[in-house]
Image 1 (cartoon, rainbow, N blue to C red):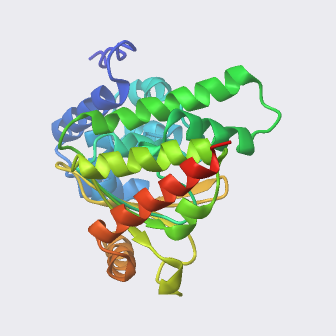
Image 2 (image 1 turned 180 degrees about the vertical axis):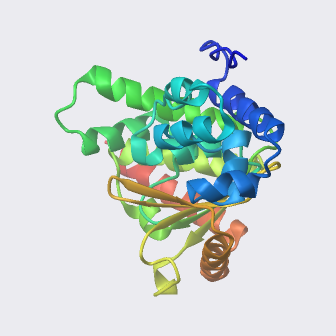
Length: 279
């Protein structure tokens, strides 16, 4: 009996691959937990592959082909589903973010990518890669702005960000770039598109001192937590681990200024930068 045809690369490869995985698993009479067991992953991990919120890695694809007897289909097609415009350590999180219904983020150093302006993003990437060509920087900025189009939808996803005060005070690019960037954040708040709080310096020690945190929930899958460091990133789906990070986020939010106070501070700092930029 012939195996399924290869995926059409002009379609959404990851969504199609996930649908094919669900179909093949159900035809084999296996639950998500039963398929995950020989792969040493959880049933929720298989569910994320099927929903398209996780990328299928080649080592998993080869094992799935063997277990489900799919004649090399998943091994052949996992490469197309894994293509991404984002760095490897962030690609899975960015792709999960695109299907999330809620995103909660604690940002210790930078304005979150979904809220960045073009000039602010360019300054960041230039700092990361001071010798890169303009074409490389242009491509990175374009990918970030494309990702930010998630917020073009008036209601979904819900974005709730807690910004450390350092995000406001660290001058990225220059005074003009900072004024524009913070005014964009303030504008999104005033349009009721996002919820933003500021964690002030005076709050002192807090539960997320070790780094940034992103929490995502989905309509058709379990929640995820993403932890990012310098050139590294880790996506967590273990329920106990995600619950612990949710508590961390709640503790940070409890120490932050109210949304109203945060908006006032963001607006005030933006005006300070604007005046600084004047001759």
